[in-house]
Image 1 (cartoon, rainbow, N blue to C red):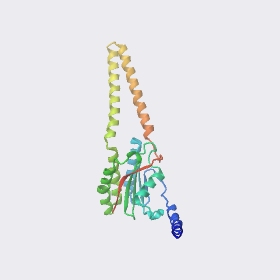
Image 2: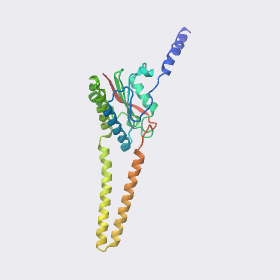
Image 3: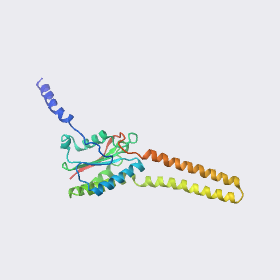
Image 4: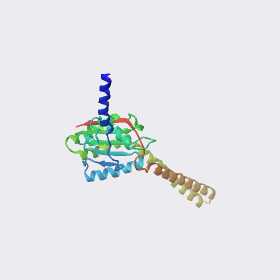
Amino acid sequence: MKKRFLFLTLFMFAAPAFSQTTFPPNADYYINDFAKVLSHSDSMELRDSLEKLQKQTGIQCVIVTIRSLADYNATLVPFQKYAENLFDYWGVGDKTSNNGILILFSLKDREARVVMGAGYGNKYDNEIQNVIDANMIPLFKSGEYSRGLYEGAYAVISVVTKKVSWLKINIQYIVLAVLFIVCIFAGISYMRSGNKGWGYAFFIAAGMILFFFLNAMLKGKGRRNRSGYGGGRSGRGGGGGRW
């Protein structure tokens, strides 16, 4: 009976502490520098790059800096757990593909975490941890917080995009453009030679290629040109470190 009473007493005192845990407001879709550690130039360049990343790939990467977990009544919450909960609370990334990325930095806690969306699984965990260890923590140790976040963010982006997907997209458009040009010149050639039947056929083919080309571009733009938080959830993957 005494043990039960003690448990209930401890629970009554502990429950409010956990229930009061809060999160910073999602003031910006890409850069939320509450700790004021990013330089103006780094912040502007990062925001521009992260906006382009989302428009071109659909990947939303958000950088958040805070002064400490204590500001959000979260001193009893492990940093990794708080970062994952923040990701889910904001809904970073698309809820279907779950390919969002959150980079959380805490100045006074001297800790940083990269949280990956559920769509990544644990595929990039080792590479992300290497980025944190090599590109971020050494600079944080020397007080170069802005540079560490800047270089770390670009390195994380490089890991998930690999630049190969960008090349494949460009190649598809190049192939369509080449086919369109070939059909136009073939049509002109056949028309000049008096074989108008084949000329019209190539012009029709060129028109169809142009239609599919523009349709693909418009669909891609509609699919990727997103902003805001789309209800994504974390997959508990990523990496972190202290300094």
